[in-house]
Picture (cartoon, rainbow, N blue to C red):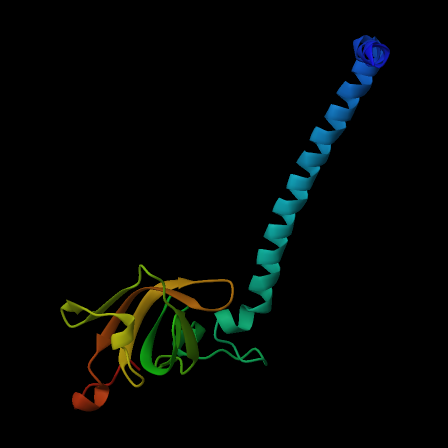
Length: 163
């Protein structure tokens, strides 16, 4: 047993084995750096692909390239309209500005207001008119920061609901 230990000690003390171990260490570090580069590149490429696949939905375009809405630019950072479907944490709003259905994604920090009071997601019902302010994500959804419940346009004669 002692002889094996001495043989192993001689191998590690020689200059050749030290150089081999250094080379192996450098190769391992280079492989880790290369793998990190592949990971970062893959993430960036995935984001670009997802954005491209959802381009039409993100910008309210029909498949033929025709755009909806006034001035040919739909609002990707919000929606104004009536709730047509609720499946928390998402809901679908029929936007009155560009007549598109927009998917609204709510999170724990989403503020919801009706008049001057804060309400919860469970207080929202289908056919509520809302104004949503948020940010678009790469799935074509709007991540809501603020939802404001508005009075129904039918209750306000003479008022056109932001068309």
